Image (tube, rainbow, N blue to C red; front, side):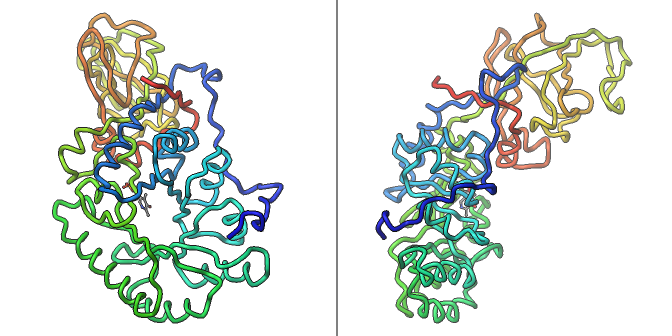
Amino acid sequence: MTSSKIPDPPESQPRILRPRRAAPADAVRPTRAEINLEALRRNLRVVQRHAGGAKVWAVLKADGYGHGAPAVARTLERAGADGFCVALLEEGIELREAGITAPILVMGGYYNQAHEEVLARKLVPVVCDMGQVEGFARMVKGGSVPGPVDVHLKIDTGMARLGVTLAELPAFADRLAQVPEVRVTALMTHLACADAATPDELAAQMLRFDEATAQLARRGIRPSVRHAANSAALLRNEARLDAVRPGIAMFGVAPAASDAAAASELTLVMRVRTEIVSLRSVASGTPVGYGALWRAARDSVIATIPMGYADGLSRHLTNRGHVLVRGRRAPIVGAVSMDMSMIDVTDVPGVTLRDEAVVLGAQEGPLGRELITPDELAAHSGSIAWEILTSISRRVPRFYREP
Ligand SMILES: *Cc1c(COP(=O)(O)O)cnc(C)c1O
C-alpha cells in the first residue's frame, strides 16, 4: 500500500472527540491529577520483560485510562512501545494528531460509514463480522483506496462480546475467500477470565483460539500474527503469542492473580491530590453533608476538599474510605457531593487550611507515609481499578511530571 494513494483526511471532522482538558495554567482549583511519566516508562519495561519477545501494543482507550492518551502515547512511543490499541476510531485519530507514528489498532470494530477515515489515518482496523469486511472491500472496489486492506480478525473464544464464533467460522472463511480486497494479517481474541484464581478458562479460550487458527489455515487463511493477552494474562505469563495488549498494567495496577514479582515492580502512574479549603470544629452530634448521613460522635474537626463525584470521586464513597492528610488517613464523612467532600481530620494533629489532601496515590507527611490504591477505592465503591482510573473526569487537569 503506497502512502501517496491514501486519501487525505477529510477537512472537517465533526465526529472527532476532542477532550477539553484544562491546561495547567487554567487550574484555579487545587484539585489535579499528577501523571508520573517515569513510572510509565518503568511499567513499560516490566511489561516488556514479561512479554518475552512478543510485541507490546499498549492499550490507550478511554483517554489512556484517564491519564491523557496523547501524552502517554508520546512517552511510551519514545520509550520503545511497539504500538497502541484504542477502542474507537476517534481515539486513533487523536493519537495520530498528536504525532504518533507507531501502529495503532482500532479494536472496537465500529466504523459506521468511516472506513475511509480509518485508512486515511493509517489505523489498523479490527473486523468482527462480514459486514465490516464488506465495508472495506467496497472502498477498494470503488477505487477510493488501493487494495488489499489489511485487517485483524477478531475471534470470539468465550467472551460473547465481539468477534466471529467458532461455529460461524467455516462459513465466514468461505466468504472471506471471495473478498480478495481484504487481507487478514492477524488474528486476535479477548480473554474473559485472565485474572481468575485458576487459569482454566483462560486455557480453554486459548484452545479455542488454536482451533480457530487451524480452521482458517485449512481454508488458506494463515495470518502471521496472533494476539490475545491483556494485562492479567501477560502478568501471569500466559497467552503471550506474537503481541500483547496490556492496558491497566501500563498504569501501575496488577490484576488479581498476577505474578507477585511483576506486581511489586509496577508503579502507580496517577496521583490525585487537592487541598483543604475549609476547616471547622463541630460539636458532638453535628450532622455533616446532604441528608445528614453522618453525625459527629464526638467533638470533631471537619475539613472540606474541593473534589466530588463530578470529578470522579464516587458517591459510593459516602461514609467510606479515606483521604490522606499530612501522611495519615482521614475518613470520608457524610455524602460525597458533586464538587466537594468532607473528611474527619480530628485525629490529624497540626492540620491547617491548604494542607494537601490525596485521594489516590501516595503521600508522605509529618505523620507518616500512606498509599491509597485504585483497588482500595474500587473495593469501597463496588467497582474495579479500571473504572476508578477512567472515572477521573476531564475537569481535573492532568499535570505531567518527571519525578
Ligand atoms: C481493554 C482491552 C485490553 C486491555 O485490558 P487490560 O485488562 O487493561 O490490560 C486488551 N484487549 C482488549 C480487546 C481490550 O478491550
